[in-house]
Length: 241
Length: 241
DNA sequence: GCAATAGTGTCTTTTAGACAGTATCTT
DNA sequence: AAGATACTGTCTAAAAGACACTATTGC
Picture 1 (spheres, each protein chain N blue to C red):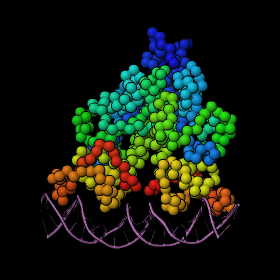
Picture 2 (tube, protein in one colour):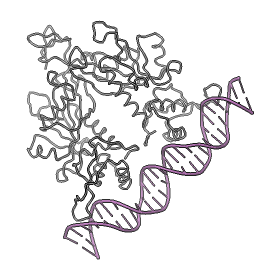
Picture 3 (tube, rainbow over the protein chains, first blue to last red):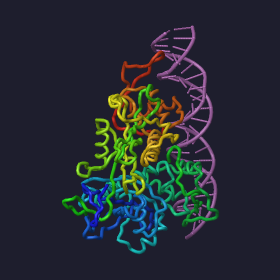
Picture 4 (cartoon, each protein chain N blue to C red):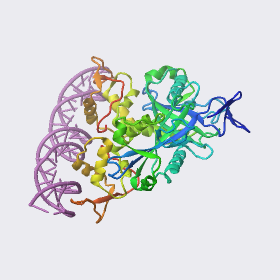
């Protein structure tokens, strides 16, 4: 396919710049943000394009090390955060001649949902990163490197759709959480108010939560029942939330 | 990024074999198949891997000609069928060291839905192709080249999901069709019986069809009202079909 | 007791499923 | 008229939305 010489591999056409990017969603504590956010980094290499601009974490896929694009994205996230993501779903591939000034490029984009607990240490280390709230992205108040604005648009559309019929967004919550917390997050993701009584009924019916007995939380009001998910795998609501 | 010499481009690592594949769905007339099918071709180049095996139509992405992976896939389909697809949606990217014997490869897969009318001429020309019925694929009765079995599995999952909440599958039908035809196709895609009265109510409520006045069809029974879609864009059912 | 949030009960409206009943064609 | 498929009407059950009402905490 490609001729191998002592100088490297020779190909007839300009090879594709084959990269991967990650959209990392998380839900910080109220003092940091009141809604889900996406992690972006400031580009620190002045020899690379979009130096000093904010961008999704990403990198080249290494065909000698990475078994496939998913493994490459997992590696990139591990390099950035220090641990592998527990959930990783392919979002879409973005490619073309125009999106990277260095040439024809392709980026296989994945997204992950992480509870803040796993990120607290990373954030405390003052990384060269920023947390973009969903509402700011929705209002097009951000301007990222490459076509990453477009990527975020697609990613938010996807997670919003998942918030209609899946318990996947619960991966943003801490291991133990209340129905009210879950309800608030779903409202933020869907960007609309959700009837609480119906929400409880549906959550109850899907039967994917276990009461964590005796544990409560809250301030000067009635404490809430705390739950945890029965399984790690997301469950599906048969008729939407 | 890549050094250019008179012999070609030199890169340090083996470049990615960057390809695209297409999953083409269609609904043949009853005498050919009683359910939706996918088009596969017999691989005809004996110098290429999987010679003589059945595979999805696909090919290399040409970074000198193709603006992006979507355009590349459109070109591949145009080369195979003689016309560009009216609808093309990205399915997923499949990549890795193991899927192509020639080396580390990546394939951005798209899918399209075409009415049989557009394919009738192509099929009449006896192409080196085969129509795989959905049920045969579901029962794993096919064995395609590369990882194309896996690709088909994902594609069918996707179109089945879309058949729950979208009018997209109507793109498989002729321009004018009856509710019964639509109903039958949705049953085939979802692989389950669907209550006809409820189906009619939901189709009616979504209000995406126009009566084609005075036109009927059928044999020795009551003729059915014929409809066509009001818009080309697929509409969404708010609570599933 | 009051404020505040958690959670329940219940009434109304909407929707889904079942299925009988009617309509309209060919033979 | 028989047979076949298209369509409608209607009853019942399930679910959604609205919202008042009760519960449990700190102060």
